[in-house]
Amino acid sequence: MPLLRRRLGPWFAAAAMCLAALSPLHAQTVATVAAASDLKFALEEVAARFEKDTGHELRLVFGSSGHFKTQILQGAPFHLYMSADEAFVHALADAGKTADRGRRYARGRIGIMVPPGSPLKADGRLEDLAAALKDGRLQKFAIANPEHAPYGARAREALQHAGLWDAMQGKLVLGENISQAAQFATSGSTQGGIIAQSLALAPSVAKLGRFQLIPETWHQPLEQRMVLVQGAPPAARAFYEYLSTPGAQQIMVRYGFALPRD
Amino acid sequence: MDWQALALSLELAAVTLLVLLPGGLWLGRWLANTRFAGKSWIEAVVVLPLVLPPTVLGYYLLVSLGGASPVGAWMQQTLGVQLTFNFLGLLIASVIFNIPFIVQPVQRAFEAIPRALGEAAAVSGLSAWQTFWRVELPLAWPGVLSACVLTFVHTLGEFGVVLMVGGSIPGETRTIAIAIYDRVQSFDLAGANQMALLLLVFSLLAVGASFFASAKLALRR
Image (tube, rainbow over all chains, first blue to last red):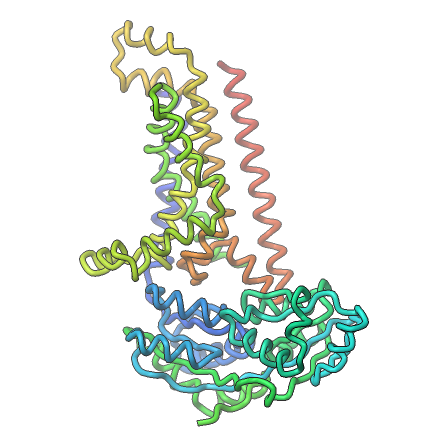
């Protein structure tokens, strides 16, 4: 039936043309960085400088370190893995997925973030959090999921150190990664949360509430380690080296990271 | 606005539709015209992706196609093809996930065609292929159109499966739905808002236009 063919023909032609036009999009191999989401703002600035300095191109993907570890084990095409937790990097190295055992690039810090209008005080020693639990001011409190997000695990340790972990059950809202936890903590739907200093200091987050550091001795250090995945292209290798230069480390420190201990 | 994610989503939707349409037409028509003992079970399997949580499908795809699985390892070694965390993986997931969206409307459309029409065509000397192309398809056209639109729009909006087998790689697996999720997590509500609004308007227009076209075509019969 000609009528039908006339109607179908242009449709398929248009679809085929779209396909042909779009397919080069995902044919190229660009160095892809899987980075812990506490790096969100700092790494974007470092990467922009790196691209300008070297002419290399990078793709940044942010998420939970634990998820990235699982995905790389299953063959995800990431070239540089920047974990918030050393243990994940060592696990990947033991599985033979990486070039070597990697290198530390920064140390993260956690603190309490409280949105404006919250009845909670931004008290890094968590004393007001304990008081709020008792007098009923606290309804919901955000942390990252301790199961697979390093910042969540450290938040749990800090709450355990303060003797609040058991009492907090039922109040905790778990973000998939620290960035989502920060989003929950500042959304106004919770009274606050424990988030990364590197997110709290970023201008777009800093204006959403008050932040105070939690003593670093209350939890295992957040030694962050990066590693090149096997078969990483030269651009990934170059960025790996770039991250240890003073210029890059200066940016990291400005966003609230401490320099790594070697 | 993440144009790259939008382009990727449009491409995924178009390719999904192209892959799914021939098989979907055949299966829908076959289900409409055949009666046998186990048919309900086949129909149940077809509808399954509609009622299953996307995470269940994503989980099974990950363990069955991932690099650690026998199938995934074999594909990787012999063909050098990876089935997860890339466009091909998304396409496989998307095709499976959209089966009910194409088969169901097609089946309903072919069921609505009187059987006598097919018999009349056969008596008039038309081959099975000619009957399908010249008699059945023009009559079932509104159903086929809405199947195509639903599949396309549904692919644009697919989230759970893409999150599990995709990995949010820009230009490769970061679809528009994932990009919205990422924008919200990055405190870029303005960006999320633009993309969400675009998807809302586009979905409404596409589904509305297909209903409108279906009604027109149905009237013309």
